[in-house]
Length: 248
Image 1 (tube, rainbow, N blue to C red):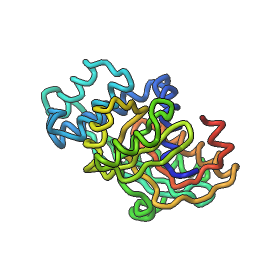
Image 2 (tube, one colour):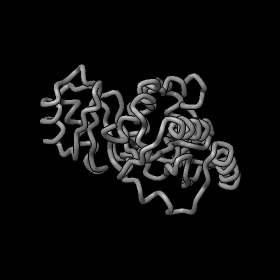
Image 3 (cartoon, helix red, strand yellow):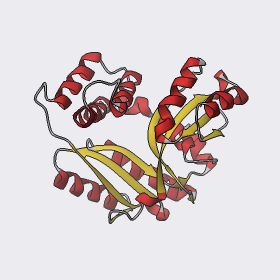
Image 4 (cartoon, helix red, strand yellow):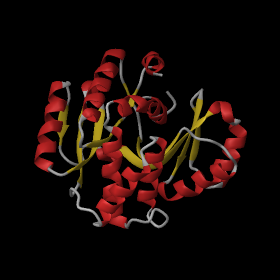
């Protein structure tokens, strides 16, 4: 596996499953509410909100839902006050796990996350124990069938992209967070379609995991993602190729 970005591509493919569980709209709504609360309700001047609204469109979230979430964030409509919090720990095989949440009750969320880690063979650790293993990056997944590597490289690197990885059936374009919008717009101008585009956390270094540990970590990640308060789960696991193929 050339980078943690490959797992991000597979997670995007699995997004339809989340939609069927009825959770994806709720999670996106929370992100929109918090983004609007912190930076205002205009996506043009609020990069975080702009990205959240873009995710809503990708998920085919009704525009009325988006508008209501924005108004709840700006205070135009009454809504729940969500807070950002994070949990850090280790999964099977010593794999680092970093969990980002939006919650209206930190004590409840903490108890639920601790219980999930315990049931799935992991353990929570203190703040700062694994967060340093990850870096905030912009990540775009581009279908390899729609563009040549040279064409994509020229467009992305000229716009400020940091790296380009060939993952076989897709390319991963990696940027610094502040360059993300410029690169995204540059690809749009060149009419280069991407499967997903997000600000994410990428592992600085990957930890090899055998097949058994990898499957156990995936079970932990999926259990965490089932929790309504969990927005994102990141690991530094180097996934065995045969397991990746099964997931793809």
